Amino acid sequence: MPAAWHTPISAQPPLFGVLISPKRHTYTLLCQKKGFTVNFLDFAGAKVSADTGSSSGKEIDKLTTYDLAHEKGVHINGPILDQSYAAYECEHFAVHELGDHFLFVGKIVLIHYEENCLEKAECVNATMIKPLLYFGKDRYITINPQTLTIKPRR
Image (cartoon, rainbow, N blue to C red):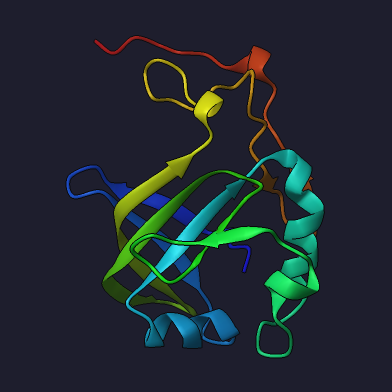
């Protein structure tokens, strides 16, 4: 499922979190599994995100219905979408109830990425990748690389 609320949590150990409502089928799956995958889509993937976000995996197989080419993860039994510019395989680390959502924290055990998507500092290459950002109410947006500012730390 597309998840609007997700975040890196820690560098050591490498942890990533995603917030899921217990109303979602994904919540049930995450409670049963030992891990999960996270796929990062380019702005061109907005339709895939909208389509898969407006249907339930409880009723359909989204990978088949939306003809999503993918591979199975190496360590985690989850999809690595061919169209993602990067993907994480995460082992279950912790779950926390936070208001009306649950924070599923995964320890990143493997990172998949397109060869040209990273710059020398292992940052996403803003001239090659236009990350898909959910802007609420079925709206999507991406970055303008000309607005990227790097400020040296003191």
